[in-house]
Figure (cartoon, helix red, strand yellow):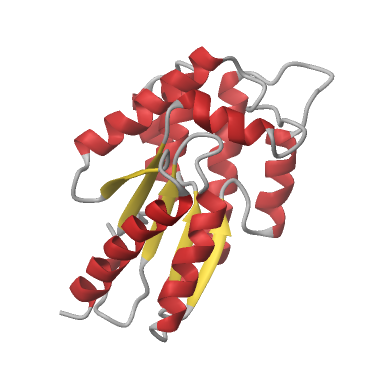
Length: 220
């Protein structure tokens, strides 16, 4: 269930930001945080994998390269959900219960896109682990920052050394993008596609419009 239909209006909202590499999630999350804070909303920004001490340790293992041995796709998937379960229990649920709005850089849509479409793991398996790890927690709204893979990877590689995911081939990231767009197509009420291939000012103008609409809905 989403936060908006659990126990009334006092609870916060859970907003996730998704997309491939180099689409500007971190920059635009900060932009949205500032917009919401200007409205007097208590906002907390977090990320996945990560967000708590234990989950950040898992994140380090997931992203660092190289390992002495190859990490299997199943191991990768289980680590992602282990970090998520800890993040939800120790951070997300308490923040929402306090009435905070939680802005999260990646959530389960990324798992479906990267481990499902990218790695080729069964979506049914991901759904089973999701049921266990998330305890009914679902995003109230998701902003999918979408850009062509060549644009996103060009930006990502200009940031510095690549992590274990960023060294994958373009075919992998094309499958990931396909996964995100498939999710958006199947969940149009929750997922809003934002064209991240535009210049930053235009991206943020689109986000501001979406945030204002979200605030109007929340206040009705």
